[in-house]
Length: 462
Image (tube, rainbow, N blue to C red; front, side, top):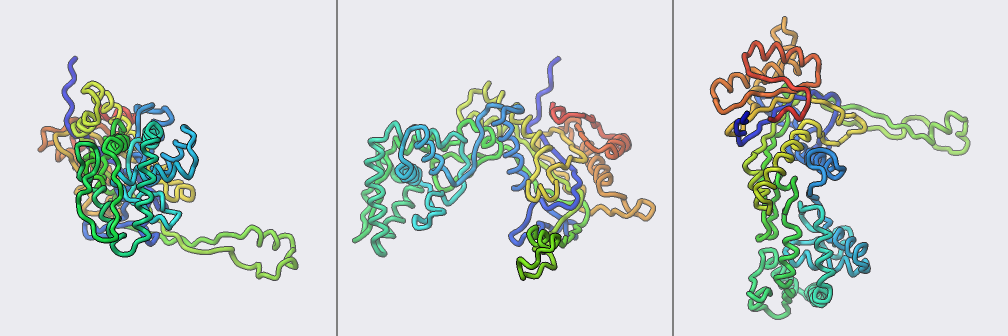
């Protein structure tokens, strides 16, 4: 039997009920929110969701679990110079100080800017997070070690020029910034592999010696997306190096929001001081004149509850394009894309932001409903909840609890859209809630939607 070709877009929709949690916070430590349908809703930002999903898939792959077991994944960090230096030390026997100085110089000369050398905490960290394959540091270290003689001589000149620029006043600093800016833009590269330094400089200005083209190309190849599956899925944007490829992500993610009006609780807490209680219980107050009454520390934490709607889309065509650009053959890209889709769906259902996970057990939540279907374009059903769910009892004109009410709305919305959009495939639904399972059967029958209930995450996609 020949299977019908799959559509370009896989749309995923999820409803989950969370109680007394705080998955994400704003700069003031308060829950994030948005106004929709004229009322405030709690919000879980898409960036928090995407990171949770990406890390979930990466950890499984590294542990040899799931569809991506053993495949290359990415690492997003500012510590590539330190990671490279560590590889130079452990794998190639370099001294720590020299390894760090060389790694930073080589990476910086490709165009990435670093923190202030005078501040030890950031001196060897790039100013931006770089999402690159996890073996990038090892690759750069191996290349540096292989070309150690040439790169050591260049490094000494480079560091000396930096010191001269830092020691200068006014023009020297401007010259150093000018050299770095030109490197960030990729520089003007001559056929022999050196940067064009014919630009005139004023008195006291210093131009940093460029990294030879063949060395720079090797570093750029190491930080290129290559076959890292999560970079192909979620994309990468690196503005600092113009000639390093960016990747248009194949995954679109929406902010999650509550289907009902936001309700926030400011929970007062009192933390006990164990030593104080020990003295009090054992009549040891004479050991310390401090007042043993009261708590050790008090404060407030904001907690939120509600049923959240969230949505994501996988662009299958973009995913395969990203993998082909990374150097895979068509067959390799197809195999990797199928595996990536399985793991993406798993992460969409299973992953959860880890803020306050120990004090609220938020990561143990399971979705009330997952709805999956395919189409020729993405479909976002946020409009189904523009009017907030009224949780008053049915006999008082309300819709009852938000969870079941949201399921009924979502299925009815999908049935309505499906009648008008012939590209939509039959939907598949998964629930972990026995109450929702009953609602699901009734709602799908009433709405007349073509919906197939499944029991495993793997069954959400054909």
